[in-house]
Image (cartoon, rainbow, N blue to C red; front, top):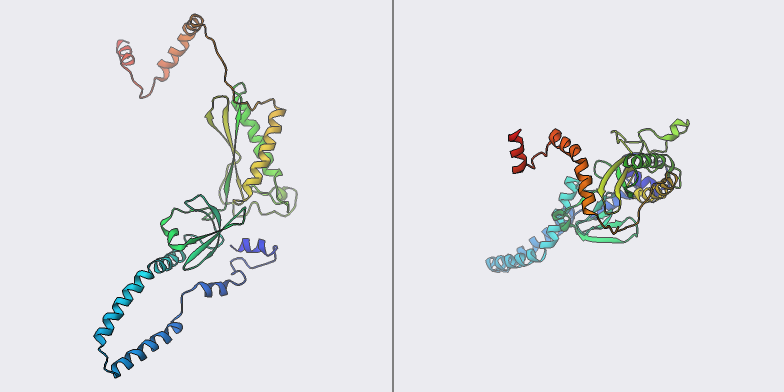
Length: 320
C-alpha cells in the first residue's frame, strides 16, 4: 500500500510501513460509534423508564411493546448487522485491504478503494469505474486477491506456428523474444516492467530501477510451453513475470510485435486457418503402411501401450 501511495504522491520520500496521509481520519469515519456516543442514548432511556415508573405506568406492558418493537427493528437492521460483522471479519482476517487488486465472482477486476461497515468500493484499474458492493456479499463470494503474498503476475503470450517448422527451433526463437522483452520493455520512467533477479542497469554500473526488489525465488523465465496441436498450427505460450497486474498489458503487446519480427527473420510461419482437400490412394497408403510396419512393431514391443490392453495384445504376448 505504501508503494502505491508513493506513486500517487509523485514518488516523494515516505517511510516504508507508514500510514498514508488522512488514514486516521478515514478510520474514524469508518469505525462504529464509540462508547461515549452511546452513553446519551442510555441516559435518555433511563429517564424515560424513570418517568414511566413515577406515573405508575405498567412496565410489563411497556416491556412487551418494547420487545415487539425491538424484534421489528432487528429484522429491519438484519442486513445492516450482516454488513457490519462482515466488515469486522474482513478487517480481522485481512482477507483483503485497501489498495489490494481483487477479482470478484462477476469477473470484475479492480483495486479496493475503501472498506466501510456498509459497502466496499472497488475501482476498476482501466476504465476508472467504481463498483459499490455490500460488504456482506464479499464474505460469501469467491475472491481472487492478486496482491496477497506476492505482486508478481505472469504475462502469457500465445502464438501458433506451422507444422512445417521445427518446434524446438520455434521454442528457441520464443526464448530469445522473452529475453529481449526482459531487457527492453520499460515504462515511461525507464523502469523494467518484467521482474529480474538482478536489474540489468546494475550491470551498467547504474542504480537498480526496482525490478529486482523482493525477488526471493528463482522465477526461471522466460518459459516456453507447447500447449496444443491445433487444426492448422502447433500452439506455443511464452511466460514472463511482471511487476504488477497493470504491467502485463504493455508487456504482452510489445512481445507480440517482437514475435512477429523474429518469426519473419527466422522464416517461421504463423499459419492462416486452412483446410486441405485430400484425395487418397488407398492401395498406395496400404503399401506405405506395410513398408513401415516393422518400425512401429519394434516400438510397440519396446514400450507397450501402458494400461490400454486389448485381447489381441494379451494373446500375442502369451504366444510369445
